[in-house]
Image 1 (cartoon, rainbow, N blue to C red):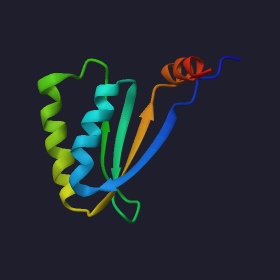
Image 2: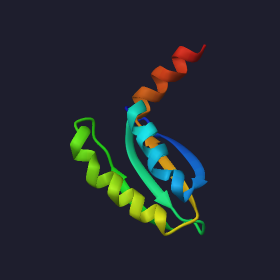
Image 3: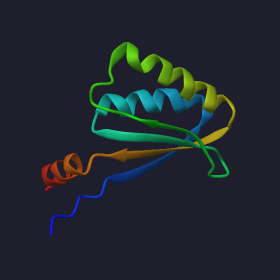
Image 4: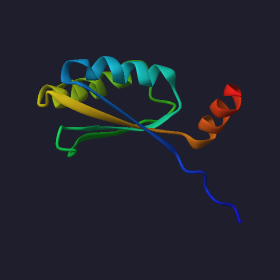
Length: 95
């Protein structure tokens, strides 16, 4: 059977004023399928699906929305969903 590889999920908990910088850093790293911003209670404030073709000026509205959502919370959790194929390649490089 061909099973679809599961995406790797990472979570980062940071202050609200650092969210945009962290998201920019994560997007720059690449291999990201989706970013979710959650507030202190764990409620989803913003969910942004990302594609490889989304670059440069197309991300400006995304950063503005993330900044607005982060301004509403003092602590945020960023949930990053990465492509599973890229995760396997990264794991292979570690050994």
